[in-house]
Image (tube, rainbow, N blue to C red):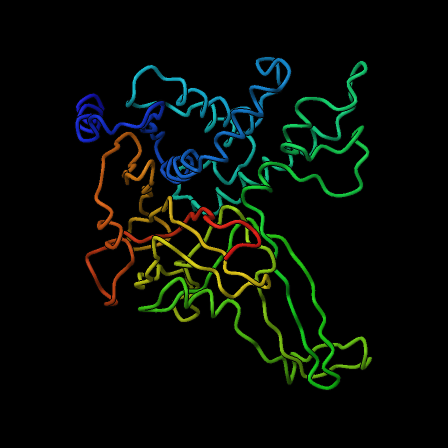
Length: 369
């Protein structure tokens, strides 16, 4: 990595961002799925800063019980505090903890980066929620860790909260979907809200993220055997159903469903469809009366022709520069290179590098357009 690191420093020269670190992550056999997601999360700056702030503010972090949260914080702090600007670190402690906690990730088979991301975020939330419920010692009725877990100005007094805990993980990634069902007999609309950390979108050949989002929110008619039980009519009725984004998250994570089960084959197949993902994205199909605007800052790429083998790399935007992370190797790339990861317009193509998980950061705040 020495030569690669020097090359990267040389490429950035005087433009190397003050205080930033660009470090590759060692691969322990099959951990590219983990490395690619960790790089995307590290360059999700609000998440990184809040994780480090939380851990630094906790009482005696060195004495804290080891879990995925402490291991992730240790790893991010290790990178963040390096004297060198570039290099390689080994996320050994984090990977060991991950394998210890979840047998799915113990094998040396090809793992799914999206499944790992989902597991990690939910595990972090579980840990923070457990900490908030832990009995307070001495006269400390509102501990530092609880304040930081809730984020600034959102701690519940004396820990007596009835609402679910809103952690900094929620504040970054959580959005709200509303599932609306309209009875075609009485016109009554039934709405049910559900939270999400990422949106999984079905994909089609030669499409775009915008069209995938429109399909996600399209109206579906429930009839025949799929009729809806209307509480007002007290009977099964034909209805129209649609899913809309009620509250857009600060960090919008989009998972492209590139692995599809094909009945005829009796197995999963990778869809290499060309799906254009823009650098700037506008969410116009939300319940809110304004457009939520986003900027792309990371892409986890699946390299390979099938779902059971292959490799993961990540593209990351940092201080207006795009970087390519491939385990231990880090290099600078031109923004135009991103287009090569959209997918293929032909069914059979030698290009097997496809965008799989997209990370967008919100550039507009609530109430603005």
